[in-house]
Image 1 (cartoon, rainbow, N blue to C red):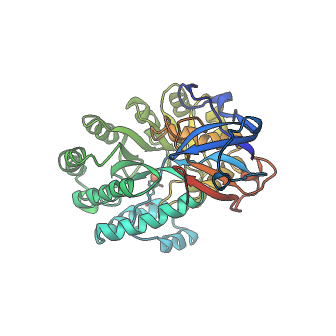
Image 2 (cartoon, helix red, strand yellow):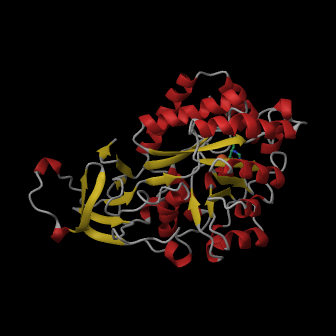
Image 3 (cartoon, rainbow, N blue to C red):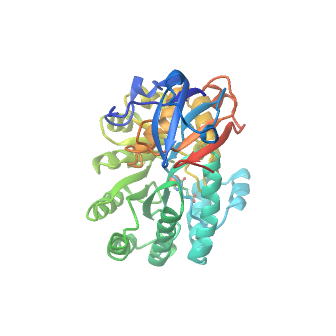
Length: 409
Ligand code: NIG
Ligand code: FE
């Protein structure tokens, strides 16, 4: 007996692409309902008076007063890394900017130095722990990027860790190759050399060992230009890798337009947008993935979610979990910030964190909503008065239990 089931769809109901505009604000809810799970999948759901008979008592969970939601789909993380970077956090408090920290060898390069000195097993062990904690907060599907190697061995090591996570974890995982996260120091004045390393030494092995589902570039002043971004996307496309791009985080980098031109599945961050970037995104099939906790942590303006939604853009929200700009994998906090700081309605935020997040990972066929046949990846809340209470009571963990593929974790 569930007090409400959120995000319910009929089995045959094709969603026809990520939710936009009014559809984003529409969250189909069934009150006083049941949900039947078998072999890790949702087998049926419906109003309580239609509950199937003959189910043994020990297989029944009474969720009276609780709400069931599809588990969060966190479509942008850097979950594999060597060590936290709280020293830079203190530097930032003292006034240094993200770009200044990067320029003095901190930031991504700091993480790369750490990671290259660590074994695959150690990285895997750390990642498993983080993944488990993220799942306890309600995340059931997740995208994980490389990008802290920046050497052939380092990038392959990260991607092999992600591949092993895919094999060993119950969560659904997508891997993104982000060799173009920063230019390593030895290539600072030889961009051509690093681009060729990506094209000739990294991508062929990644393709042969099937280590990545997507390709990413940090398109930003001081990192990769739109032209360099385009070249890497084209190289990825030769191996069937669709782009998911870091775009418009710190500046109007041209990343959004480049991503749209390259038919990116998503362009992510979007703290810094103008009319042209918004128009380009609205007229495309590319999803804009907003990362409010990164904006919060770096004291950047929050993403203009309302303008994007009103212009007709498809948007998702994600954590950007990483040691430099968002050391949190808490999707519940992302939801709260989306509502409080970006003025998204609770329904919009929930859809952006579930079904649209699934789209942003290419996982929409089996994740992100309550539909017969989908994986039973579910959040069971504490007793709460309404769905809006979730983002409203920010900072409190209102997730009581989480089911991943039919098993409580
Ligand atoms: O998404 N923007 C680039 N990459 C990460 C930050 C990486 C880091 O600082 O380690 C991000 O914010
Ligand atoms: Fe990121």
